[in-house]
Image (cartoon, rainbow, N blue to C red):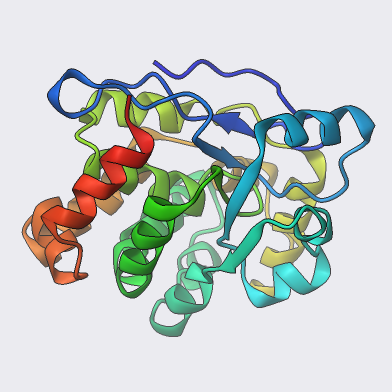
Amino acid sequence: MTEFSALLACAPNFREVSGLRARDGRVVASGRLFRSDAVLAPEATDRDVLAGIGIDLVFDLRSATERAVATNAFLASTGADLRPVDLLARIENGHDYWHVIKAQPDAQGGEAAMHAVYGAFPAALHSQLLSMVEAIAVSPGAVLVHCTAGKDRTGFVIAVLLGMLGASKQDIAQDYLLSAGRGNAQVRERTRLLAVNRIGFDLPAEVIDRLMSVRESYLDAAMARIQQDFGGLDSYLASAGVTAQHIAALEGRLLA
């Protein structure tokens, strides 16, 4: 089972995804898959840690606006292959989840909005999934998946990858929940300001708490949408063009 370790001071939610039991009794191998919040300005100690890991491929799930405000300059400087996968743009194109909070600016409304966001993740990822799987399967070094906080967009993508590898629902949820309490003040403040910009007024702290939290019900909302819209994970993967050969290649790269 993945254990949380504060590997980077600059990114408290940076961690390795390893040790989870996968298909045929194998486990997710150490040193191959990492997940994180944004890694923006690592100091010398953090740079040494990252150099030791040897990240070769980075999926940046942030929006174009997020990437422009906080660039991935350091990871780019290492020579890693940076691939933007803007899930938020695809979500916001068809889902106005902010109206949920505006209509009900309390803890319950914040939680409902998070369920709506997670419910939109499967469709947002669908067209990008095949290219991600293909890239991971041939990556010579470690793979990093990250967004701004490393919990929502990243949490869903990692959950799908682990599901492809045959990890149990319980283990996937436990890995996801390791993000609890690993946020930082800067991300919280950016979330608050984004909400003000979208709905026109400041939100109570209890609402921001819901937006910044990780809850198993959030991830359940995404998985329920996969079941409802696609008939389950296998059908979701197949409709995205992911074949048994792709899954076997992913297993060969990430499992031990």
